[in-house]
Amino acid sequence: MAASEQDKELRDLFATEVEALDKRIPALEQQVKILLLPKDEADERNAILEIRAGTGGEEAALFGADLFRMYQRYAALHGWRFEIMEISETGIGGFKEAIASISGRDVFHRLKFESGVHRVQRVPETEGSGRIHTSAATVAVLPEAEEVDIKIDDKDLRIDVFRASGPGGQSVNTTDSAVRITHLPTGLVVSQQDEKSQHKNKAKAMKVLRARLYEMERAKRDAERAQDRRSQIGTGVRSERIRTYNYPQGRVTDHRIGFTTHQLPYVLEGAPALDEIIDALLTDYQTRQLAALQEEAHA
Image (cartoon, rainbow, N blue to C red; front, side, top):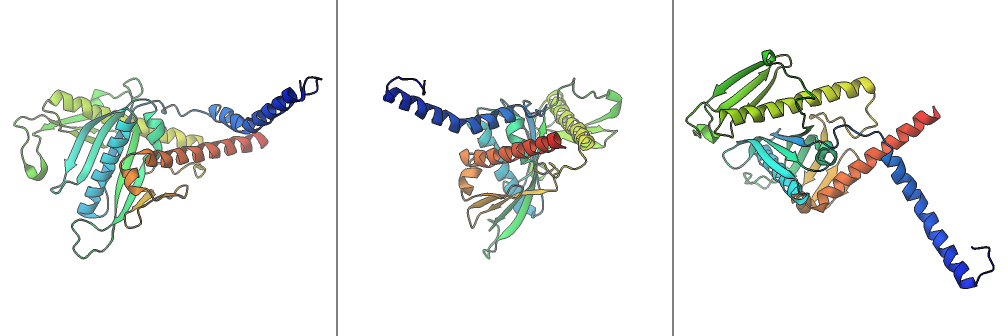
Protein backbone atom coordinates (compact mmCIF):
# COMPACT_ATOMS: atom_id res chain seq x y z
CA MET A 1 0.00 0.00 0.00
CA ALA A 2 2.84 2.40 0.87
CA ALA A 3 4.44 1.85 -2.52
CA SER A 4 1.21 2.07 -4.48
CA GLU A 5 0.14 4.92 -6.65
CA GLN A 6 -2.77 5.82 -4.35
CA ASP A 7 -3.16 9.30 -2.94
CA LYS A 8 -0.54 10.72 -0.57
CA GLU A 9 -2.98 11.05 2.35
CA LEU A 10 -3.59 7.30 2.42
CA ARG A 11 0.13 6.55 2.17
CA ASP A 12 0.89 8.91 5.06
CA LEU A 13 -1.86 7.31 7.17
CA PHE A 14 -0.45 3.86 6.50
CA ALA A 15 3.11 4.98 7.35
CA THR A 16 1.91 6.46 10.67
CA GLU A 17 0.14 3.21 11.55
CA VAL A 18 3.22 1.14 10.75
CA GLU A 19 5.38 3.40 12.92
CA ALA A 20 2.94 3.10 15.85
CA LEU A 21 2.80 -0.69 15.52
CA ASP A 22 6.62 -0.94 15.33
CA LYS A 23 6.86 0.88 18.67
CA ARG A 24 4.53 -1.69 20.26
CA ILE A 25 6.51 -4.71 19.10
CA PRO A 26 9.22 -4.72 21.88
CA ALA A 27 6.58 -4.50 24.64
CA LEU A 28 4.49 -7.25 23.05
CA GLU A 29 7.56 -9.47 22.63
CA GLN A 30 8.34 -8.95 26.34
CA GLN A 31 4.77 -9.91 27.27
CA VAL A 32 5.01 -13.09 25.19
CA LYS A 33 8.32 -14.01 26.84
CA ILE A 34 6.80 -13.51 30.29
CA LEU A 35 3.81 -15.68 29.38
CA LEU A 36 6.23 -18.43 28.32
CA LEU A 37 8.14 -18.36 31.63
CA PRO A 38 7.84 -21.51 33.78
CA LYS A 39 4.86 -21.11 36.10
CA ASP A 40 5.02 -21.56 39.85
CA GLU A 41 2.60 -24.40 40.48
CA ALA A 42 1.39 -22.64 43.64
CA ASP A 43 0.60 -19.27 42.04
CA GLU A 44 -3.12 -19.97 41.65
CA ARG A 45 -3.53 -21.31 45.18
CA ASN A 46 -5.08 -19.65 48.19
CA ALA A 47 -2.71 -18.77 51.02
CA ILE A 48 -2.18 -19.02 54.74
CA LEU A 49 -0.84 -15.77 56.24
CA GLU A 50 1.14 -15.97 59.47
CA ILE A 51 2.46 -12.91 61.32
CA ARG A 52 4.54 -13.04 64.51
CA ALA A 53 6.00 -10.29 66.65
CA GLY A 54 9.80 -10.26 66.54
CA THR A 55 12.36 -8.13 68.33
CA GLY A 56 10.95 -5.07 70.06
CA GLY A 57 8.58 -6.40 72.71
CA GLU A 58 5.18 -4.72 72.90
CA GLU A 59 5.99 -2.35 70.02
CA ALA A 60 6.78 -5.35 67.77
CA ALA A 61 3.39 -6.83 68.64
CA LEU A 62 1.65 -3.54 67.80
CA PHE A 63 3.48 -3.46 64.47
CA GLY A 64 2.46 -7.07 63.83
CA ALA A 65 -1.17 -6.00 64.31
CA ASP A 66 -0.64 -3.12 61.86
CA LEU A 67 0.72 -5.53 59.23
CA PHE A 68 -2.15 -7.95 59.78
CA ARG A 69 -4.70 -5.18 59.22
CA MET A 70 -2.75 -4.01 56.15
CA TYR A 71 -3.14 -7.42 54.49
CA GLN A 72 -6.77 -7.61 55.62
CA ARG A 73 -7.50 -4.31 53.83
CA TYR A 74 -5.46 -5.39 50.81
CA ALA A 75 -7.50 -8.59 50.56
CA ALA A 76 -10.75 -6.62 50.75
CA LEU A 77 -9.64 -4.27 47.94
CA HIS A 78 -8.89 -7.29 45.72
CA GLY A 79 -12.18 -8.98 46.52
CA TRP A 80 -10.50 -11.84 48.38
CA ARG A 81 -11.96 -13.65 51.37
CA PHE A 82 -9.96 -13.05 54.56
CA GLU A 83 -10.74 -15.54 57.33
CA ILE A 84 -9.09 -14.99 60.71
CA MET A 85 -7.95 -18.34 62.08
CA GLU A 86 -5.99 -17.48 65.21
CA ILE A 87 -4.98 -14.30 67.03
CA SER A 88 -2.89 -14.14 70.19
CA GLU A 89 -3.31 -10.60 71.52
CA THR A 90 -1.33 -8.56 74.01
CA GLY A 91 -2.90 -6.36 76.63
CA ILE A 92 -2.75 -3.12 74.62
CA GLY A 93 -3.90 -4.32 71.19
CA GLY A 94 -0.78 -5.88 69.76
CA PHE A 95 -0.62 -9.32 68.15
CA LYS A 96 2.01 -11.77 69.36
CA GLU A 97 0.82 -14.12 66.61
CA ALA A 98 -1.94 -13.94 64.01
CA ILE A 99 -2.95 -16.43 61.33
CA ALA A 100 -5.46 -15.98 58.50
CA SER A 101 -6.65 -17.88 55.45
CA ILE A 102 -6.89 -15.79 52.27
CA SER A 103 -8.80 -17.12 49.28
CA GLY A 104 -9.49 -15.68 45.86
CA ARG A 105 -7.89 -15.18 42.46
CA ASP A 106 -4.06 -15.02 42.29
CA VAL A 107 -3.71 -14.78 46.08
CA PHE A 108 -0.40 -16.61 46.43
CA HIS A 109 0.90 -15.12 43.17
CA ARG A 110 0.48 -11.59 44.56
CA LEU A 111 1.54 -12.25 48.16
CA LYS A 112 4.33 -14.84 47.92
CA PHE A 113 7.16 -12.30 48.15
CA GLU A 114 5.80 -10.83 51.40
CA SER A 115 7.50 -13.57 53.44
CA GLY A 116 10.37 -12.35 55.59
CA VAL A 117 11.19 -9.85 58.32
CA HIS A 118 9.37 -6.52 58.16
CA ARG A 119 11.08 -3.79 60.18
CA VAL A 120 9.49 -0.62 61.60
CA GLN A 121 11.19 2.58 62.75
CA ARG A 122 8.94 4.90 64.76
CA VAL A 123 8.29 6.45 68.16
CA PRO A 124 6.25 3.86 70.10
CA GLU A 125 3.01 4.91 71.75
CA THR A 126 4.49 3.67 75.02
CA GLU A 127 7.64 5.82 74.62
CA GLY A 128 7.60 9.02 76.65
CA SER A 129 10.92 10.51 75.56
CA GLY A 130 10.10 10.64 71.85
CA ARG A 131 12.98 8.34 70.84
CA ILE A 132 12.66 6.35 67.63
CA HIS A 133 12.69 2.59 68.18
CA THR A 134 13.35 -0.20 65.69
CA SER A 135 11.15 -3.29 65.96
CA ALA A 136 10.31 -6.18 63.67
CA ALA A 137 7.66 -8.73 62.82
CA THR A 138 7.97 -11.83 60.67
CA VAL A 139 5.53 -12.57 57.87
CA ALA A 140 5.05 -15.98 56.26
CA VAL A 141 2.78 -16.54 53.26
CA LEU A 142 2.23 -20.23 52.60
CA PRO A 143 0.37 -21.75 49.64
CA GLU A 144 -2.69 -23.58 50.89
CA ALA A 145 -2.40 -27.33 50.41
CA GLU A 146 -5.11 -29.88 49.74
CA GLU A 147 -5.25 -33.35 51.24
CA VAL A 148 -4.12 -34.77 47.90
CA ASP A 149 -0.96 -32.63 48.05
CA ILE A 150 0.19 -33.74 51.48
CA LYS A 151 -0.55 -37.16 52.92
CA ILE A 152 -0.57 -37.05 56.72
CA ASP A 153 -0.78 -40.35 58.60
CA ASP A 154 -2.77 -40.34 61.82
CA LYS A 155 0.04 -42.22 63.53
CA ASP A 156 2.33 -39.22 62.87
CA LEU A 157 0.08 -36.88 64.87
CA ARG A 158 -0.27 -36.19 68.56
CA ILE A 159 -3.48 -34.31 69.28
CA ASP A 160 -4.00 -32.58 72.63
CA VAL A 161 -7.18 -30.78 73.69
CA PHE A 162 -7.36 -28.10 76.35
CA ARG A 163 -9.53 -25.27 77.58
CA ALA A 164 -9.30 -22.09 75.47
CA SER A 165 -8.30 -18.89 77.24
CA GLY A 166 -8.16 -15.24 76.26
CA PRO A 167 -5.52 -12.56 76.89
CA GLY A 168 -4.20 -12.54 80.43
CA GLY A 169 -5.63 -15.95 81.18
CA GLN A 170 -9.23 -14.82 80.82
CA SER A 171 -11.40 -17.85 80.15
CA VAL A 172 -13.30 -17.71 76.88
CA ASN A 173 -14.61 -21.24 76.94
CA THR A 174 -15.79 -23.66 79.59
CA THR A 175 -15.09 -26.82 77.55
CA ASP A 176 -11.92 -28.44 76.23
CA SER A 177 -12.38 -27.11 72.70
CA ALA A 178 -8.87 -25.83 71.96
CA VAL A 179 -6.67 -28.16 69.93
CA ARG A 180 -2.91 -28.58 69.69
CA ILE A 181 -1.57 -30.85 66.93
CA THR A 182 2.04 -32.01 66.88
CA HIS A 183 3.45 -33.54 63.69
CA LEU A 184 5.89 -36.02 65.18
CA PRO A 185 8.23 -36.55 62.17
CA THR A 186 8.95 -32.81 61.79
CA GLY A 187 8.17 -31.47 65.25
CA LEU A 188 5.77 -28.87 63.81
CA VAL A 189 3.16 -27.72 66.33
CA VAL A 190 -0.10 -25.97 65.46
CA SER A 191 -2.68 -24.69 67.96
CA GLN A 192 -6.20 -23.41 67.34
CA GLN A 193 -8.69 -22.10 69.89
CA ASP A 194 -10.76 -19.41 68.16
CA GLU A 195 -13.79 -21.64 67.58
CA LYS A 196 -16.05 -22.99 70.33
CA SER A 197 -16.15 -26.32 68.52
CA GLN A 198 -13.26 -28.75 69.01
CA HIS A 199 -14.02 -30.21 65.58
CA LYS A 200 -13.72 -26.79 63.88
CA ASN A 201 -10.50 -25.98 65.71
CA LYS A 202 -9.02 -29.30 64.64
CA ALA A 203 -9.99 -28.67 61.00
CA LYS A 204 -8.35 -25.22 61.10
CA ALA A 205 -5.20 -26.60 62.73
CA MET A 206 -4.92 -29.30 60.07
CA LYS A 207 -5.29 -26.67 57.36
CA VAL A 208 -2.35 -24.69 58.76
CA LEU A 209 -0.27 -27.84 59.35
CA ARG A 210 -0.87 -29.01 55.78
CA ALA A 211 0.23 -25.62 54.41
CA ARG A 212 3.44 -25.64 56.48
CA LEU A 213 4.33 -29.18 55.40
CA TYR A 214 3.60 -28.32 51.76
CA GLU A 215 5.87 -25.27 51.97
CA MET A 216 8.64 -27.44 53.46
CA GLU A 217 8.34 -29.80 50.50
CA ARG A 218 8.40 -26.87 48.04
CA ALA A 219 11.51 -25.43 49.68
CA LYS A 220 13.22 -28.82 49.55
CA ARG A 221 12.40 -29.24 45.84
CA ASP A 222 13.59 -25.73 45.05
CA ALA A 223 16.88 -26.34 46.86
CA GLU A 224 17.41 -29.52 44.88
CA ARG A 225 16.64 -27.79 41.57
CA ALA A 226 18.94 -24.83 42.15
CA GLN A 227 21.74 -24.68 44.69
CA ASP A 228 22.30 -21.00 43.99
CA ARG A 229 19.12 -19.00 44.68
CA ARG A 230 20.76 -15.56 44.72
CA SER A 231 19.09 -14.70 41.41
CA GLN A 232 15.69 -14.85 43.04
CA ILE A 233 13.99 -12.18 45.14
CA GLY A 234 15.14 -13.37 48.52
CA THR A 235 14.71 -16.91 49.71
CA GLY A 236 11.48 -16.57 51.62
CA VAL A 237 13.44 -17.36 54.78
CA ARG A 238 11.70 -15.68 57.69
CA SER A 239 14.99 -14.43 59.17
CA GLU A 240 15.70 -12.29 56.11
CA ARG A 241 14.94 -8.58 56.48
CA ILE A 242 12.98 -7.60 53.41
CA ARG A 243 11.29 -4.25 54.11
CA THR A 244 11.52 -1.21 56.37
CA TYR A 245 8.62 1.07 57.33
CA ASN A 246 10.11 4.41 58.45
CA TYR A 247 7.38 6.52 60.08
CA PRO A 248 9.32 9.79 60.65
CA GLN A 249 10.13 9.95 56.93
CA GLY A 250 6.85 8.40 55.74
CA ARG A 251 8.98 5.96 53.77
CA VAL A 252 8.71 2.27 52.88
CA THR A 253 11.78 0.58 51.37
CA ASP A 254 11.96 -2.94 49.99
CA HIS A 255 15.61 -3.91 50.41
CA ARG A 256 15.59 -6.77 47.90
CA ILE A 257 15.08 -4.53 44.88
CA GLY A 258 15.92 -1.10 46.34
CA PHE A 259 12.35 0.11 45.81
CA THR A 260 11.30 3.12 47.90
CA THR A 261 7.98 4.92 48.18
CA HIS A 262 7.11 7.85 50.44
CA GLN A 263 3.47 6.80 50.71
CA LEU A 264 3.71 4.85 53.97
CA PRO A 265 0.15 5.67 55.18
CA TYR A 266 -1.30 4.47 51.87
CA VAL A 267 0.80 1.29 51.92
CA LEU A 268 -0.57 0.44 55.37
CA GLU A 269 -4.08 1.09 54.08
CA GLY A 270 -3.53 -1.75 51.60
CA ALA A 271 -4.19 0.74 48.82
CA PRO A 272 -2.61 0.79 45.32
CA ALA A 273 0.62 1.95 47.02
CA LEU A 274 1.13 -1.64 48.27
CA ASP A 275 0.30 -2.94 44.79
CA GLU A 276 3.12 -0.74 43.44
CA ILE A 277 5.63 -2.54 45.66
CA ILE A 278 4.25 -5.98 44.79
CA ASP A 279 4.20 -5.16 41.05
CA ALA A 280 7.83 -4.01 41.24
CA LEU A 281 8.80 -7.28 42.97
CA LEU A 282 7.00 -9.38 40.36
CA THR A 283 8.54 -7.40 37.46
CA ASP A 284 12.03 -7.77 38.91
CA TYR A 285 11.50 -11.49 39.46
CA GLN A 286 10.31 -11.98 35.87
CA THR A 287 13.25 -9.98 34.53
CA ARG A 288 15.67 -12.19 36.45
CA GLN A 289 13.91 -15.31 35.19
CA LEU A 290 14.20 -14.10 31.58
CA ALA A 291 17.89 -13.30 32.05
CA ALA A 292 18.52 -16.76 33.50
CA LEU A 293 16.74 -18.44 30.57
CA GLN A 294 18.75 -16.39 28.08
CA GLU A 295 21.98 -17.40 29.83
CA GLU A 296 20.96 -21.06 29.61
CA ALA A 297 20.12 -20.65 25.91
CA HIS A 298 23.59 -19.22 25.18
CA ALA A 299 25.45 -21.69 27.38
